[in-house]
Length: 87
Image 1 (tube, rainbow, N blue to C red):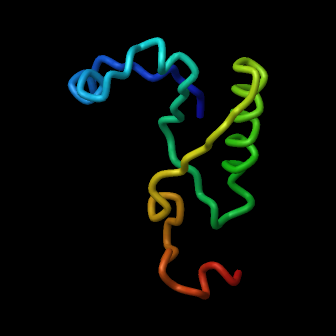
Image 2 (cartoon, one colour; image 1 turned 120 degrees about the vertical axis):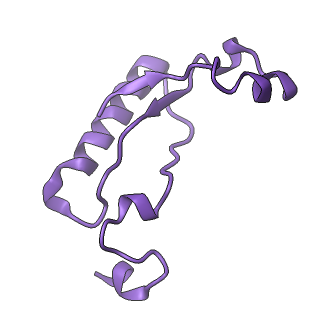
């Protein structure tokens, strides 16, 4: 898992429509991998936290972390079921 700078080339039309410049995205980082939040023994969560801390140190802080999608981070789980969250 590693952080990568966002590349504004792919969503160019969206950025142009919303008047977002590449400079506006200079602090945006994207982790292009999934984590399993249901298993403690994978090390995924610790790795994610380490990457967030590394980004915070490099960027002078982190304002928002988005995990998308919840279903992708819960293999075998059901994000709509209470037993998944009780465990």
